[in-house]
Image (tube, rainbow, N blue to C red; front, side, top):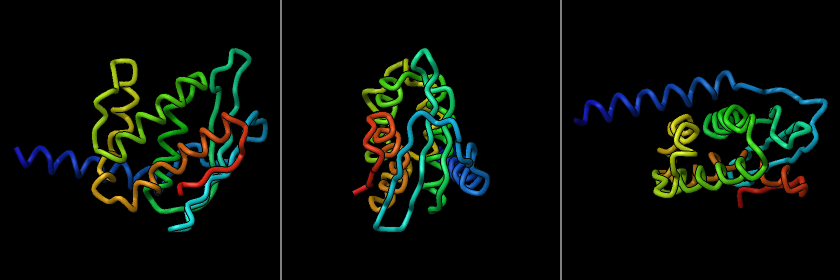
Length: 157
């Protein structure tokens, strides 16, 4: 059985490295309807998040710029992929579930509605073993909340 877990860990590590090296949606979104800056003072991760909400209130596009470690970058990259098509409330619920996953490695309250998205975010579940890295993984999600709430600033502290 440990071979399966080793294979899963290797796969997860590869997903993080791939998104860290080649982040998706790493660009400025000129027609963004909401933006926020995220800062993790402990390790220097900084991102600027751009969100474009459509007329129906769903997130039509999301992008980010900045600099950070592979975990921070991979998390922002994955987040910008999974929030597209979601309402602000759905995106915030997904963010809360992700923070639970990052802190504990599981998400017992994640129901069927979040299952597919949580599976895509699962490669970051291993950060719970490294408490100082949880802030790296959740920074983009704090920035998303700030953008959707109109507060424009977020910190992982």
